[in-house]
Image (cartoon, rainbow, N blue to C red; front, side):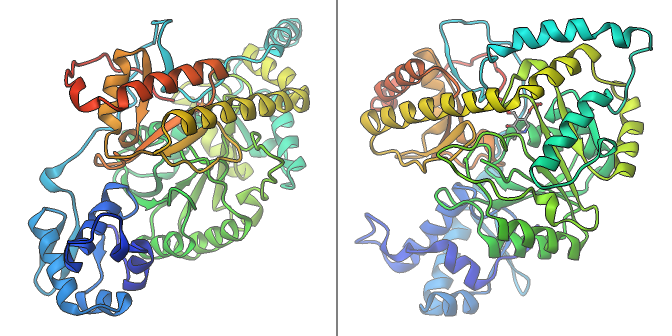
Length: 484
Ligand SMILES: Cc1ncc(COP(=O)(O)O)c(C=O)c1O
């Protein structure tokens, strides 16, 4: 059990439940039950939460209690609700439905495949010159042993300066360099989470974060993001207060996969609520540099933190190149020291040469990142144009940054579509990979990290199979491959 949802909160989530398209002949109780099932399937209503008492929901929806009673009965019959007399009713899915969100890794060596499973850009042209300059710097480090558990000082200073420039004064001893953001997350979890500890995550969220949490045997609770509006402040703050998780893992800038940007007031409220209930926040800033359309990014979440509740993680992979494997943690200096002690038992330190490459790239950050933003905006617009042309039934909220959009499909077909797409040379990351328990089948993450022509081609192939999906039928087991 992960908390409860109040009548007014559920009423807000249900929205226009009584006026859904195609319900003309169904009675109110069936429409209400159908809407609750829809919220569960879309990950907006978490599994294992207690629904409001019948009377409370009836009042919030201004309908008769008999309608709610009948709707709850139907939900019990379809396996979406478990009730215990006198205790309440909890959400569930029929038949223990569960899709594992593994981070299975098989290198993709099929060059004909258009890979929309990975949301990362190819390296920028400046990478080679940065690597050459790094090689020239290397002799400065060769007289030492080369182990720097918190990272080489030049890189820590460069990362700290970037935080300071964003309005968050930071010194080098608050930075630990890691081998990618994923590594940063794993180290923070090792330090901050005992097995079985509770962690609140967004739904949908980044699948490899779920894999890291599974690795630490975390108990996960979710906050469902609205496809069009993102975080629901009351519900998010309510979940924190009710669940009192040990940690919350959030991606406030151009969230992966939805692309949403958390506004400044909510950042402040989340930090205050987290502090009030003793929750530490892991803030994943992977996409913070990649805003588009002149969108201003609010201050870093850590700006509102006065009690060392916030640990920020980020890295080079999205603006620069994933192959560098350079990320970092920003925390208090004592936390960084504790993380370094944990790290000694894991990988000791990051490669010096790669860190030097990162130093050179960060020295040229302004120009490189400006190019990336332009490139991503062009690719995003090509993808949006192709979707509007070839799959007009799909709904998308235009992301103002990041590298992904979250398409709402015309049916719960995401996994079937991904299987069929492989047959026509397109690899997709279906919606359920971004959630728990096999929900999110009506959604598909589409990254715009491939060249525009490839994106248009991929959408054309997806559209061709979408319309005869039911006849495609053949479902062969494919090798698993990485989603990033
Ligand atoms: C939100 C988020 N966090 C972390 C990562 C992993 O990044 P890295 O390559 O730096 O380990 C990704 C990569 O897709 C991501 O989207």
